Image (cartoon, rainbow, N blue to C red; front, side):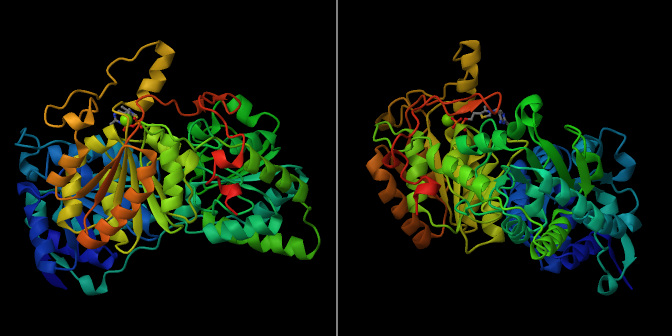
Length: 591
Ligand SMILES: Cc1ncc(C[n+]2csc(CCOP(=O)(O)OP(=O)(O)O)c2C)c(N)n1
Ligand SMILES: [Mg+2]
């Protein structure tokens, strides 16, 4: 046993739970923890420029690699409230992050002390545990429990709030014998898997909906093996995109109201059975439930018991970790294969493949200003299979999901549920810290980019090279499009004549100068034929200077992107491809 400050025990636990990086902003009330990190020396700290940024960095860090848990740290009061959006984002997408805040001393909590706020109460609905630790001797147990909870069941964030005196108090703690608690993960039984496969066997046109739970469980290989064994097509959700490579013959598109393919929606509507694994029937995926459910049977596999039946009652539900369920699905499916008990699904798969080959949106345009579709087409040409994309929200994210290609799990890192503007830069920084050798490409609209633009300085300071494609329509594009229903174009303009940058006309903010001012490299693209050379130049600059490189593309101001309110009425505003040369990087045409 050894006597140490409670925060020294906390840092020793972080170390033993595998934490190697932390993202944060110090302040007086959290300085004891910083002192403990400084003397411990095992945790590299990345100094954010905004505390919300630190929370999104932690989330990007967790998402990049199986087993990672991002840690974000801030002081009392506004630092905690700044990180609330990060906690919301992480909880919505089932991502574990640990948020640590400083707090006023226990005896002054009730006295409206400077920057004392009940952050645990504020964070409660967004976390698996949010606690202000009032007894120093509880600090080790609270941290141990935090890691147990973050790793158990449906993953999610935890907030630990540490009053200044609690941090400073000496306690007895033995780091050498500290052991993480085992994580709890429910497992499907053989009888449950047999029953689900029986139901699937009775269907004529079954599909698998593959959710982000498969990525969280690191079980994408098992998913592909299962799909291949039973010969059933897969529709990944936005969070599950990458579980099966886009060019796999059984990947039949994404379905949904926005981030979806025409062929994905058509295939979902043609199906008569859906096996959902690690998904949550998000409304941007399902659209109206009456149409989504009509004429189909559903089996839902989820790690969290109370998720079964939350959105609609499935025909059968199984509570299981996606990885554990898939391992058993593969085992039972192989047995049935050997026994000749599986159906030949070839005609159904061919039908889905034909839709994937023919129901294409046009991407090849030569217009100036550039049409957004052309940007994604050229990104497909410029960036290799092993590119990790990061994006958040906006027409940019929606069109990105419609046109880009993803080939591996965790290579589409997207804030699916909360969609807070500003998430992209800090989340990308978290990804770069977690995987410094990866090729990382972020995608933002101009407004998302401006929200937390200061975080670019973190990328420059800590030498985190990545390419940030900023599609600039000088508009809150998604909201402008939504306002068509109100016949207005109100408070969504970002354009103005920048007195310092007449060369960009009325596009307003000079992103190049801002990015350069923050220590990054930046290029501006005005014409479609400049796109590919700019991406190549960006790769060179990234390698040479080891800082983020911004490629800003000046877009046409108004382009409506395909979306709708039901899976069968997604509105196509632009032309559909009528010949392969109009969609030259469409996945089914690439080979
Ligand atoms: C914090 C926050 N406030 C408001 C919104 C609503 N919102 C969603 S997209 C969007 C506009 C995005 O504009 P931009 O980033 O330029 O992307 P574009 O749609 O133009 O491609 C807004 C305001 C949001 N998602 N998050
Ligand atoms: Mg915009």
